[in-house]
Image (cartoon, rainbow, N blue to C red; front, top):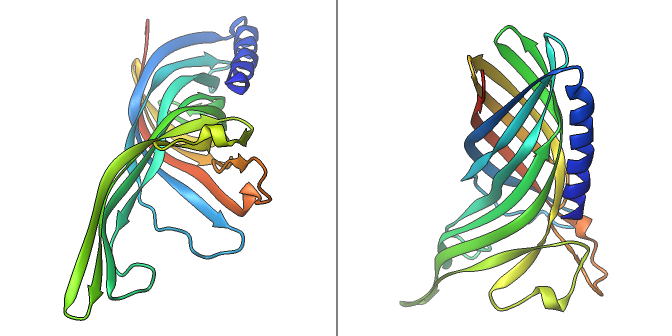
Length: 245
């Protein structure tokens, strides 16, 4: 959380500096994320075939018009990320052994973007970095595994959920429990998007390219987290309403 606080303080200082010579607009923002992950295994090609999941994006936004065409945009938002996984046979290459079901991983972040927007009449193009801190997570699953033995078959079924716990630094044994697993709290990356102004309302379509790795470092382990890299990928659609317009 300290990284987000430092980033917020720096952003706030920039805000006050710019506000002395800029037109400032404050607004509320809501939308949906189509979230997924990118995988990069150093010594394996066994990346899982993940799907996108829908999540919420809610928060406040600020626009500082530096000139008629250029503005500095920031804010603070709750952003849902993660991925979905649909399980189906064949499983692990065994044609006589099948898995059916699903798994859903939801990761929730507090996020601060720092974008620069270039405006052409009612249209705008924006880009810039973001910093996010994980605040919670949850995984849900419901699946069955069928084993065939000649003329007989056996099906194992399981469903449930467990929490994902955001952690800073190395993961220790204390970060694990029967119903929780850790993930790296700090996330960062780049935003790119377009928007359209309709009076006080701005419609936006954006993409967030996560550069951070949510795989944590385990205490006492020689494994390098960069060998099993998971990074967030988010396509989002949002509506912002600016007050006093």
